[in-house]
Image (cartoon, rainbow, N blue to C red; front, side, top):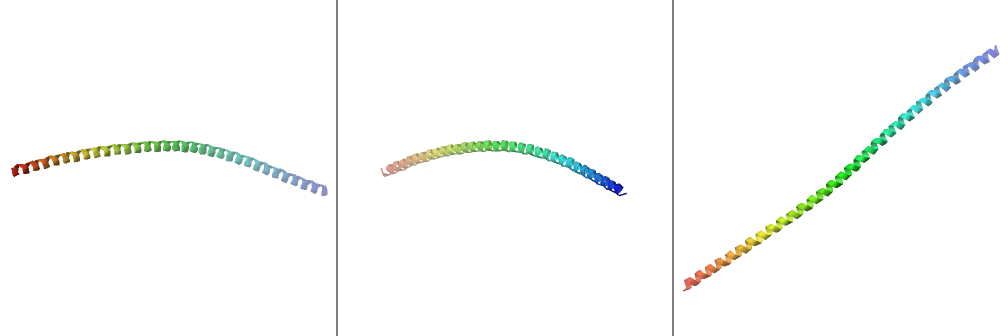
Length: 119
């Protein structure tokens, strides 16, 4: 009887060990699947990060190019404004010179009129 009890106990322990081993194998399979899923997710995130980095690089280059274009346009506008101001100043000086000439003619006419009256 004692041998039968020991055999039954040994069989029960063997069965428990097999069940524990099966549980560990299932846990290992699950862990490997989780690790593979994580690896795939990391790979997808790395790909997304690379695409975003490339897009940021392109956006940065575009912004730099746009800034350069804006600076060129601003310089052209500044130069055009300076040319227009110079033209306006030249026109103004011409109007002043013409007004001064007309004033001298008028003064001469007034002087001539006085001289005529004094005769």
